[in-house]
Image (cartoon, rainbow over all chains, first blue to last red; front, side):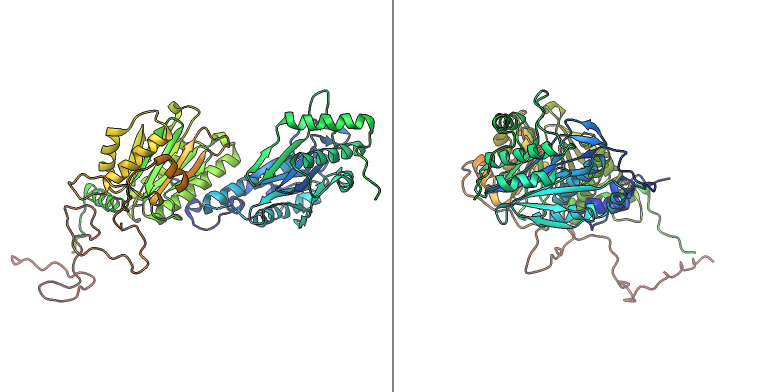
Length: 276
Length: 300
């Protein structure tokens, strides 16, 4: 007869990490513990594409386009790839979409679990390191084409500024200054932000800059979706300030996107930067 | 042949229940009150770090009295259970009833298993719904019994006095400020000498207050009310009087020592009766193991 009480592992003091607990109690629920047969599995599932983040005085903005692709097919037009990780941070994902969403869910639970058990939140660096650990454990799948590459942004209350972290598939964690982009259109988005980004942008200016960057990425990368004017689908934008994070309402994003598109009607390549 | 002592099951369970009750009665009370927007928890707890009320999940909270290490264990188990279920299924699939059942099974098994010390804890598990009618408040006792409470509930040291005060003053559908005032007044009512009725103003810094508030826009409805907010809600209440020192308080200067007398009539004293002395009272001999066989009866 099995014991009706909670399993002993639940009552053991010790780890405050949900993924550590999961790896002991139900390892099959961990995305990284799945056995994938040999061979390339990357073409089996949709891919998410471009994520952009940029800081401004008093906060940080993260935005992602809405397209998921499977080879030459557009798998989904309105996928969401930018998520709040907790109150003061957000995570955006490029790569194998299904696996990435699962990693984000695990990461969200990980942060909340720590907060509830310890009664305090992790530091921004602590959160970035936990995400690195989750990505590192996924290396085997990445080698078979199921790579997940996140971008992490958070508002650090101890230094009062927004911070951005990028990752590679081996779990390498790199802090970025000012702005960064990941995904297939990231080269174009980063080039665009180089010309548009100013250190003294306000929140709205910063959102405009990242939406311009996503437009430029969609302009040159077939896997990145531009603003869908007929269906009114616009990028997902997370804004994080000292008051916490929030998703910018679709109506506000649509207004900024409409203004940008009106400008591009006159100059399709976007605003011109001065030569000197 | 020596005979092992026979202890009837009734006596065994009663002893274990008495033991657990004594442990629980030593601490201060925790009050849970249902109000218009959710459930309010109030406890007199001078410690800012060792919480008695905590968040379990989006709409579920946990409050406990008794031994800190034991209920802390149960709290962590609850957080793990809830997060595990929410991760494996969905956030909406984590229910207070499921959690209360898991706690009840655990406490019940430990209570009735002979080899373990029963947990000296009592627990509230509260869950809020979209409307006040869907709010649930479960009370779990040391032996794994579950009770579905309505309106208000009290557990811990002076539970009966506090509950009596609440019964006279509780109003359904009260605002947060009203519910808080009633709950704090009830806690202040408890801590007077036996028989004397007198009310004490509990200092704001000694209150641990948390709510499950369905009007919060975040999915996580649990929030703690800080002293500044409490002052604002409670208004002017006159001079504050800290509670009498309790056994559960930590003292920097000395380890807690039990009081010297065992009063069988008082279930709250820490000294247990019936412990045999170390040496034989008549001969002064130390006890020997195994015990000596029964002396042969004079008839044989």
